[in-house]
Image (cartoon, rainbow, N blue to C red):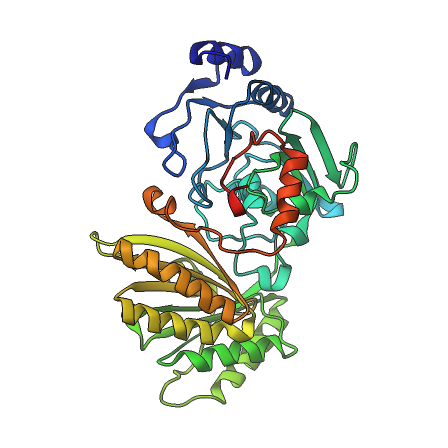
Amino acid sequence: MNLSMQSLQTVLESLVGARVRLAKDEDVVAGVRPQLIVEPGSEEEVASVLALADKEGLRVVIRGGGTQLSLGAPPAGADILLSTARLNQIIEHVPHDLTVTVEAGLPLVTLQETLGQANQWLALDPDLSPAATIGGIVATNATGPRRLRYGGVRDQIIGVRVVLADGTIAKGGGKVVKNVAGYDLPKLFTGSLGTLGVIVSATFRLYPLPPTSRTVYLTSSILAPLCDLSLQVTASTLVATSINIVGATSQRDTYVMAVRFETSPEAAEDQSATFVEMATSKLDDTLQTPRILKDESEAQIWSQVLQHKDSPDSASQRIGLKVSLLPTEVARWLTSLEQVCQRLSLEADWQAYAGHGLVFVDLAGDETVLQMAVPELRQLAMEHRGSVVVTEAPPHLAAQLDMWGDVSGLEVMRNLKARFDPRRVLNPGRFVGGI
């Protein structure tokens, strides 16, 4: 960098106004403290900041709501933290076309409240705090239980506007003005962790709000019957919105399952009753009688029971894992997880989106043991045709762990990074293989 910090701040202020400040402790990203915080108010201001960073060889990290900054390895450098907080508008909502275009810094909860007034919604429900923004959800490819019915971000995003590392504004998908030749930008930038460019706005397809919801709730002292039921549902004519199974090593004899149906009143009643019959046929001493929940009792299950995480002992370290498996392999991997935890004296709370094979694990224990456990659990996932990503870890531990593991197509991903950000300006070192 040729500019002094004071000169850099002055130049940035000339680009974005007074929304430039020195970083504070709360601005640290995975243990790395940026020098300056910049809040551009338009895509043109984002472009000006990145053009300057590219010219001066600065490193830029990106923050939306700050809910997923623990995902990824610590950045290789951070001169500027670029916040999308001021990019928080709904650009266009076309109810009759079931589409919406929004700026990247808009919180998802705010968007859903507005869309709800038109009896519509964006069918994404990641288990994140209310601060989670559209741009962060796209950049991290965050998903939730309803992915079983509606798909993930890549299934719902139809257009994107991004600013590349050199300040170029590019567009792809719906409402195209300029494309980057040969690339499907909406899908390419989904899950790219801000390493290819800054997402400034996105266009999505929408769905009508479902008129009725019913959830079937049941518990078992053994995991296998619940996983078998999940497979039976997905192989049947039932159309479940989500299938969650929850467990914890501290309660090895209690597993909870919730299967949600969101559709017309008649269909919701019929499908939930059919699933109850399906579950009742498997009743024995291990499986309790299923209950159909609605209204307040249903909301309570989803907001409290299924999203609950026990706090680990204060002396323990804690990491988060995202495990991607075939649905048929979920039960076997979770059994292996329990065995590893018992042998290594670790505690685990986990939630499985069993219908589509995602498992989220909170793992707590001695730091040295956690470092041993991650590669072992990753190997077990590979044996079950899956993968493990460390989604959260204390900064000093994240610096020692392989957060991503081995992935296929790494050379292609490196080539994309070289194409879009040859000077490694954006989120350097945070993604797979040090990208």
